[in-house]
Length: 479
Image 1: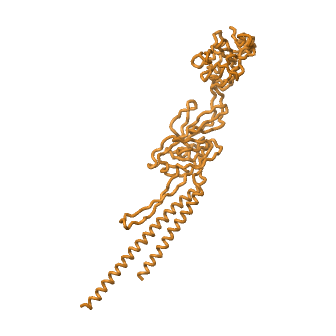
Image 2: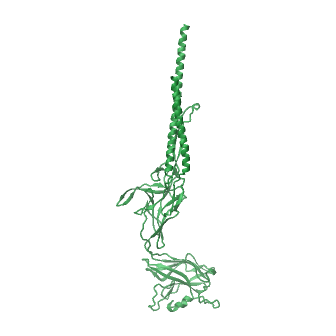
Image 3: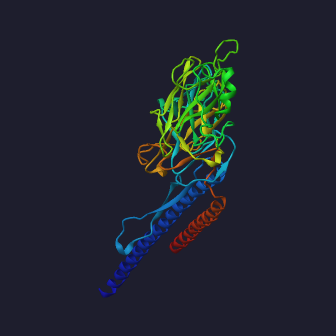
């Protein structure tokens, strides 16, 4: 019986040995296939990184482009502590929307670049009616600021997206209506009749008129006769007064009229101001060549400008007086001296009036000469008549998580839940007119990443080659 039991025991041992070999081969093969799978995910991740690198290099000269960086994350199976493995890898895109590109001056007034992390609000044209584009109702967001005026007057960038903003009231600067694609008008700015003459300056304590003699008290004074300043009185008037400058006024159709102001000291601290009569006619008997403010062509008393011992004006109150008789386009002028009128001993003026500002609020019609953009994003037109008028306010938006915006064509982004709702404004940034923001791609950095990516990809392929050889060796064990 012993002799028969020996072969049976050997058979059992042989069977157990074969089962152990098969089990080890299976476990070994599973480990190798796991290594191969991990390497495949590594190759896939590095391929994705290389795709982003190629996109960044291709768009290195694209205005407003934001490069896409790649981040990696390991995926670890839930194994017991003593049998943990490193796991596979996945690649994810990482936005760089908060990183600015380089800024470059272009000389084009309608080009804009934003400092900070805000975006232009833009819209896409979805059709046209009679050659005029129609637009989508939803906004996209972009840093591409190469805007120019198209044939319809809209501001559109190089990618074909239209800038959104609010049209402004030319007088008050208030927004008119809801934000929409900005359309600039190339028409005339209409003429505006003058209504106010603003004077700011200092009257000398002692006016050095041509009649002034330090030895003769009162030689610097002038008292207008009851008939006013006629042609016969003009020579005496000019000798006893000092000029306050000339100003050009406009009527309702923009026709100019130029008049001169002259100041006459009538008492120790009292002055009258006169203006040259635009309606003077030598053919009219008694016609006045110079008229005192407040008096007009009647015998009414002129307006007295009085000063205290500190040189500050005390009358008239309110900072303005009517220049009765000076009527342009049916509007009686107001002399506004609220910005500053004093009577100091000003040696720099040599006894004359020190005029710091003399201007009026009217103008002739004009055409657009230039368009500029202010630091807060206002588009301002400069006209041939010297008038500057705000045309539109560019609409800006910023996000709590700008790197979570979804990328779209043409260097634009769309809203996502992860980015949050758009918030209006520049968020502490500013606008630079006549400049563009370039791509934030660094070519040298991208080439460095490309070399590292290539080496990582090649290393993963080497692992697969090694696994293949080890699997072949495992198969050879059976043989």
